Image (cartoon, rainbow, N blue to C red; front, side, top):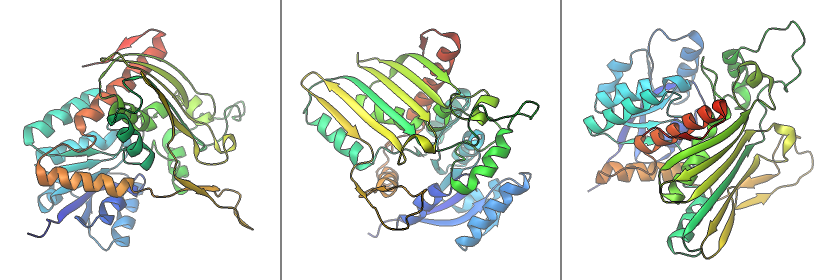
Length: 365
């Protein structure tokens, strides 16, 4: 029998378009339309219409009206709308691919987890667990090369700017508006927290390293201690959200973890940033560079903003969608489902509470 082609509806595409592009690039999925609610701001309709025109598919200003004519929805709106659109899709019996973060509100995550279970649909939350270095790390652990994993640390520093450096706002100037800054940043791809609600780096990008730790340790986080700072960027300082954080984790199986995460600015690193994992086992240790394998390219007249080192053999997007297709075919969970992403959101929430209180915080179960 030929493999089934799943019809995919894009529910808003006002963040980066990497998510629907990744879905469309896999031969098991076909984009059929873009849809959003009619009362959204003009800039959201403009972005939705542009993507629809580029892919020669209709744009419908009616989410519920578009849901019956698809198998899968691809959710990539403003971050605070992820769970709202995903929840409506789940209640309509549609499978879901949703961008990160799942939600800055844990109650919304819980509602989505419940709806996914009730309506027996699959939900893939976007992650980077199929990067070559992570695939190799998981295989190395599974064959017992370093014994029992006892401790894990992840450096996750993005060398991207987020507007003017901290300290550049002149006396009397108004604070930077979060949404205005995100709309301005769309052209260079640094608008990961697009939306009205300001989000710090832990909330925007924390799911990536925490998903690494969750996959490799395979044990729930019980307690968290964290420190956060608005260290680099004026927009973060003005909106009282972090761009730098350290997090300590205690897992149920006794493994301990640490995370250092930050949006450290383009001047802080020659390439995309420092992203490494350090694993300590009972019989040995590993240091993993997330970017490997990579090649370095040096040429005359290279733009100053062009990264010299480039990742190769990166099939993460394809492998995520292949994993999702197989989850649909065989009625199993994808590599990061709604429940797993909900637990990561609980870890982030506990970290933010710890940073505010200065105390260890237990994660919400």
